[in-house]
Length: 183
Figure 1 (tube, rainbow, N blue to C red):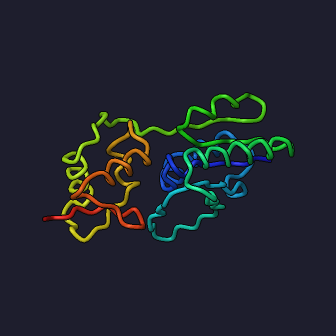
Figure 2 (cartoon, one colour):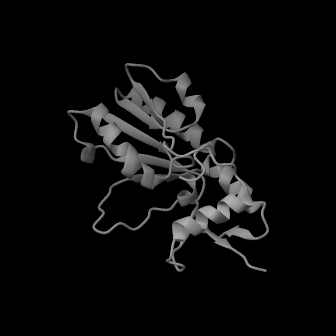
Figure 3 (cartoon, one colour):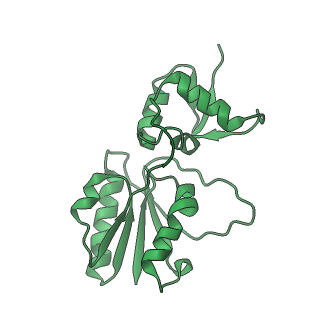
């Protein structure tokens, strides 16, 4: 039996379904991916974008605190618990702490970095450029923090959030929707 743990603080949920789920299926074969419900841990806002006829199952766990590394602590604890119950574990995260517990028998780590994009510096003008590129001609389209992860692959979502929060004319609302304030 398998358990999948997703670090929702640095891997957007849509990236799991778009890019990573097939990798998980290849690892757990002959088990069926639909029978392995991912456990998603987060201490921040997350967005699951609308996709027509999408049908997904997931378990979402919100940490009790917003203390740094609370998500990692929850994943470590529950991964250990699953292994002690005889289950095999896949942890999907870019945090290096999980490499300490990876082994061939019980725990497999999958990292996810956006490929084929040059590393872009996190600057106000590059964020505005990314927002405009994502919107294209649809000026009413909402842009979320997870959309910007593709444009800044060398930065974690939390780093992008902190940088945007330090700016005066780019803001995040409560749902992590990014918008530009024109003065």
